[in-house]
Image 1 (tube, protein in one colour):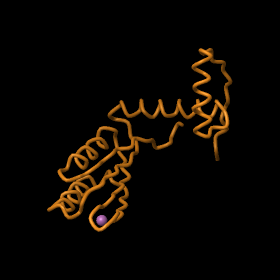
Image 2: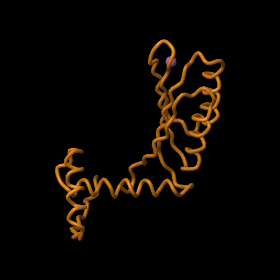
Image 3: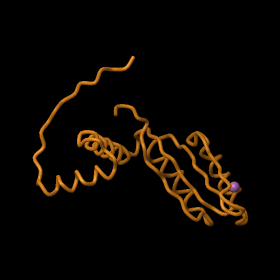
Image 4: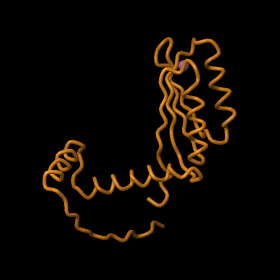
Length: 141
Ligand code: NI
């Protein structure tokens, strides 16, 4: 059963030009109203802050692009993934072309652990591009 959410309305005072800029921006982002845009900003702020706490359990995705023909690179990446098997829940591998691979891993664990996995993978010599997306378990949001 879903908990019934209590809604609070509040007023915000703001510089008119700043608000006009905000309205223009959220319109271009397809928001139907300010409330939804502000809710998203607040959630993003909370999620960003959760990642400051190293011990909080959270979720992220790691994206890697690399050339599988680079000597021993695939093996190295697989070794690292196996050593963090408790944290890597799922991996998707896409062969982008004859040479390049894209991998997306869903990672779960403490913020510190996820960062450690991402740093190890992204810093591996031969990885062309890597990015950690820090998201949330969705609880309490
Ligand atoms: Ni591939």
